[in-house]
Image (tube, rainbow, N blue to C red; front, side):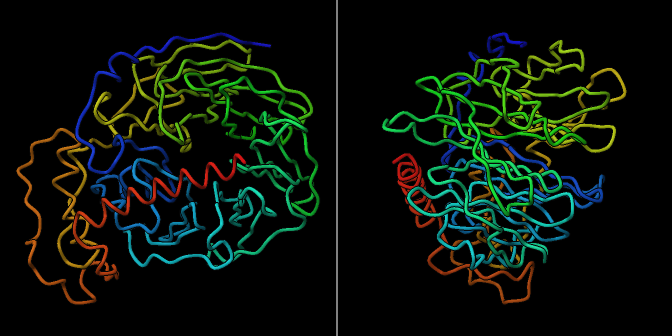
Length: 424
């Protein structure tokens, strides 16, 4: 077993940095999806989409996305121009440009903590409501419809993450100790694409370890899975090499105290290397030999995603000077910023969603500590005709700042209730 504790390299700097947060949380990219040269990033302040390497990133504000919770970036997948986001009240579908949002009927009003793309092209999601029967859900039509797969998950398992490799499916989360209020890490494994499930054990959690997330399956070996266990101020990375029968600790990283959904990043590189990190201790790599080498201790890593012979990385746009960066895997480490906040394209006021997001543009710029001299659309201007811009429909009650701010507060309260319900 390899284990060590790493102190946060940028903790004091990160805690000292502050700015106004009209969106209710720190501006941070937390997921990046690369497909056919197009880049989509799910952030705590909405969606960012780029269609070509020389094109700007277009911003869709979080206020235009149904049920989006201020300061939280939920997992999602991209299929062509369609975006699917996990959510507190089911999966929501939209376009990469932030248009035509709709709810999935099969998961409506269900807590969906994760949605992933399977190797065969299907989309899988998992429900995680306390006191209800939970299922893995599958879509074979690009996320347009979902249906339960096979047997329900083991009773009491509160799912948090879903990972898939062929017919092997892992659902990782927490459950209660029998006859106790104590939580323990739990994992359910299916070897027949969800038809049947076997519950395994991740072992007892420390008193403050309340979050367990599956991160990544080893390419080509479904018996190898990395999982992170999160405490109040630490992230403990563990691994199984026998399908969840036994676990070994790889490393414990000091972590900055953070909100719900504190990010932890992990992705496989070349030659057996596994890159990982969090926002408190920077980027490290686990070598095939078992050695752990620091790579970039000064960066606030919130996500990693491999793209051929390069790796994408989410950073802190304020502390790191970039929101997204890339580095080559077949050359000495040198990160190349791919997106800074001042490179995000402002939406032209051509549709209701465009104008809605434009109304938040100045707030976004202030939060990003930029002085762009930006002015919004005329506050008294009539909504543009349908068919302009991305031609989305936004309810009249969602226009303007104070209803959205109130909605964000309500969403946070609902999220807290949903999380509390899951812990009961």
